[in-house]
Structures are given as C-alpha cells and as structure tokens.
Image (spheres, rainbow, N blue to C red):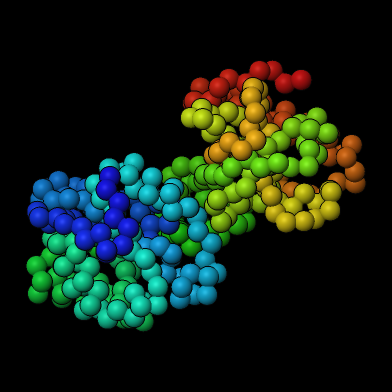
Amino acid sequence: MKVFRGLEQRPVFPDGTAVAIGNFDGLHLGHQEILRFLIDKARERKLTSLVLTFSPHPEKVLGGGRTAMIQTLDQRLAGIRAGGIEAVLLAGFNKAFADLTVEEFVDRFIVTFLAAKEVVIGENFRFGRNRRGDVDDLRRYGRKMGFAVHPRPAVFRNGQIVSSSRIRSLLQAGTILTANRLLGRPYLVEGRVIRGRGRGRDLGFPTANIRAENEIAPPGVYLTLARIQGRLYPSVTNSGDRPTFGAGSAQIETYVFDFQGVLYRKRIGLHFLLRLRKEKQFPGADELIRQIRKDVAAARLYFEKKASALGVIRVSPGR
C-alpha cells in the first residue's frame, strides 16, 4: 500500500481512483463495511482504491484537543493496509484546511489530486468550512465534475449505532466486551516496556511496565494476549493508578505467563479480551497478593480452554 503524507508528494493516478473519505479511527465494523464497498467499486471500474484520511483528528484542532484516539496512526494505517486498500492520502488537518470552502475541498482533493471517479462516505459525512457541506452537496458537485457518490448507511449492533465516539466511551469505562464487538476484534494497546519499581517481582508476579502509545487505556484488570516478537502469550494486565501503593499517574503493567527472556525495552502489543474486575485499593500487600493469585488462576483456566482458538502458546499448569 502506498502512503502519501500530504499533498506535496503530488500523487498521480492516471486511471482515476475510488476514494473513501473519513477519519476511520478504530476501523470498526462500520468502517470495515465502507472499505469493503470501496474495494468492490474499485475492482468493478478498474480504479485504484484509495482512502483519504486526516491527522490529527479534526476534533483535536476544532474541538480543543479533547478527543482521545482509539488507535495510533500506525495502527490505523496498518488496518487499512490489511483491508486490501491500495493507497492512502494522509492529509494534515489544521486551521487552514478547516477553512477550505466546500467547493475548494471538492476541487482540490477529490478532483485535482485524487482524480476520483467513485466517492464512498458515511451517510452523515460533513465537509468544508464550518462543516457546511453534506451528502447532497457532494452529489451535486459529483454530477457537475464527473464522480459518483455512495453514502453508506450506519451499522447497528443490538439496536445501537456503531461509531468511534461510542467505542471511545466504552473503552474509557472498561466495557471491553461490547467495545470489542463493535470493533470486530480485541482492542489493541501497543508500547515499549520501561523500567518499573519492581513491585510486581516483590509480590511474586513480575510485570512488564508499558509506556503506551495509545491514548486510551481501559481501566481495570483484564485477560489479555501479549504479542511479543510476533508470538501471542496469555497475560493478565492491570491498567490504572495502583491505589494500594498510593494513587499516581495511570500505568499499564502486564504479567505474561511462561515467557522466557527479557522484556525491557521491547515493543509489546496487548489485545484486551475480558475484564476480570475493577481496580481497587487493598489494605496491604498480603491482600493484594491473594487477589492476584485469584486473577492469575482465573486467567490460566480461561486460556487453557481457549488456547487453541486464540492461537496462543499453551500455558503450563498454575502454581
């Protein structure tokens, strides 16, 4: 997949493109439907399938930076690539971009730079200065400038719309099972292992402390799959401020079952599967150790039953 970072690279598409436009944060079930439709249109008309997306998220510029992203930019691009898309134009979003008129956006991006013949969007798509443009405006320009417009309906699960904003709320509340259903996969947090204070080792459960690259870390204690150097390992992950030792800044630490080797400074991915419990403050270390033992025993039982389906390295019996 070709990634064009900004218009200065002057992408050229002599045969034209089929373009999907959006932020695509999370690449949830609704986004996946849009990308599937895009690929079908591109194949049907022998066009390049292309995604026009933005960085930073427009709400970070227009909304004062309050929007927490579900994915890192690298995760978003990797997901688009995995979906079979041929090219991405990553447009830098700033005040000048936000000030483009409806006609300027269509002429500069859709027609001139992307040579779009087919445009795929969500049904509530808005664009241009003050978000004045809508689907009807885009269709009107399409009839005049030679491209077709395909608004895709929202996807619903259990009577509720699948949206990035809903998934953000679910993740921030620790409602991981519902969030995963709307994403179509387990939520992934990635980062590098940093040096901690060694409390986990002192408690008998050495943990890897992770400096997360993602902006959302679901609070609580979870069953997770740790991806280390391309392999999946069962793990239990605590995400929060560890109140038993005095509340501080939020951290992610994971106990990886049966891993042999040094994790310090390695990049690790954590796939969040199931929340075991909320984080809580214990009277002391002994009570915390007892709870950790229960968490680990529950995790080992779960992974023993699910190991084959999850593709994990089989865990050894608990101690």
